[in-house]
Image 1 (cartoon, one colour):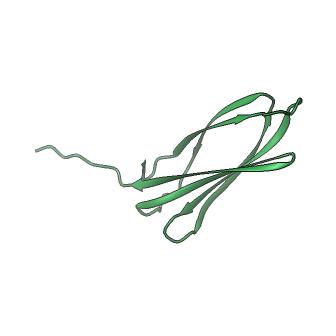
Image 2 (cartoon, one colour; image 1 turned 30 degrees about the vertical axis):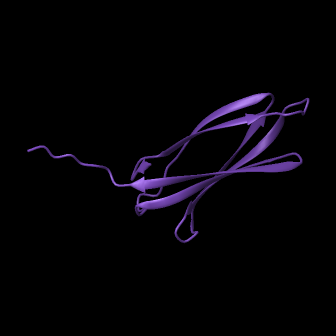
Image 3 (cartoon, one colour; image 1 turned 135 degrees about the vertical axis):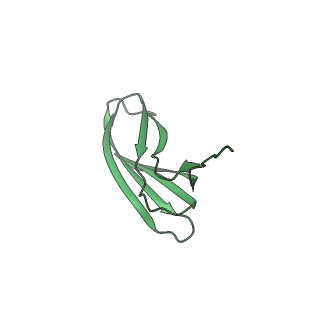
Length: 100
């Protein structure tokens, strides 16, 4: 779960499975509302992959998101191919605890 107003944090691990030299990988991050399929956010970057790479990333979610189920889709495009990974997450309101 992600608390409304806080960033979505995640870790990506990229591995070179055979190319002898380093090469650029274009990473595209997309966040979708699972209920209606609406795209809420698209970010992208290019990284250089030699052997393996561990990336810690955070995406700032829109402040007006409703509680509910969302999906992040990460697409990695490289020389001759594409890899897609998806992960579901839930946005929830911050819990406020009041003690009497």
